[in-house]
Image: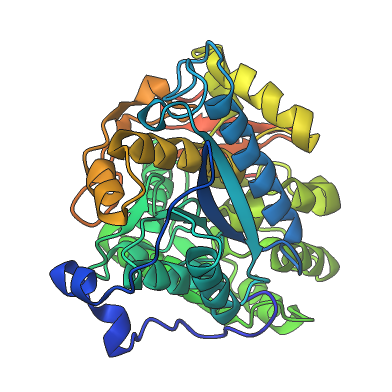
Length: 425
């Protein structure tokens, strides 16, 4: 983790945590969830302090923007936007209570339990770090309470047999497939793309990302020139950057959070390493803080994403929602904050259709979710959860940084520009 407390994936669960299905419902502690007059409480677990605190603040602004749209009547074509509050609860308002996990999975677990048992939240949302989403969703499962994974993209999160886990946005296998689709299309046009350098941090996010990319490279005919795992939140990346520089791969594929991403790019510059292309697994490479710090060194870098402001050209609602978010946050929606915005919309829609604060009833309503893509702010086919709680209609996009903003370059149906390749051409 960014604070150094979680260095390896921790997916081993104790007996109490891995109970699913009827066993979970039978063993789950029963917590009364009677809500205050006119309020439905949602617990949000994000990093509000520490090295990714800005991401947590952006998440809060995104979620509060969504809550305001739900609670106040608008003419936006989003679920729950055209009324005031939740009609399934007589117009009750959604109120979100925030908890700070500080990038620590065990802190996240404790805060999730507090939100459930003390604050009486009817559902949880979070958590940015995949390692924290793992522990928080396990806690929600134990209490038979729905957990909406807002932004964590580790594929393994939806493969643990949990009944109360839901994710509206894509995971890293979907994202990585789009990245390889782009490289395949460029090779078909004559670009020389044969070797890849994988660079990833050592928590669940980085490990899962590297595993997926290694698998896809083998299937698609690319060679891994180097696979560099580094200690998250490391004070120095000199040795690691020397490794990827020596490999001289055609494409650098980093999986890093913001602080590590900034250090990576600065170290590359200090050592005179200019990759032919960067195709990043978002995270830090979708954050404005990274581009404020080192954007002058990243012209032409590509990152995967769930969201693009370019969609506003086809769907004006996107620009209107962005304006509402920008009034709070002072910045545009990005890949993370757009997913967090939609996560609360989808979760609240399920709670509303359940018409009760009972966790099993909300879970059942979420499994029946059917939201068309044009009723979201994303370039998705729609929101429909499979048996694992994963939405498979959440099509990714690839965005290229042009020195001022991100431009959608892939896939063709969403692109507004051809990709510049190599990035330093």
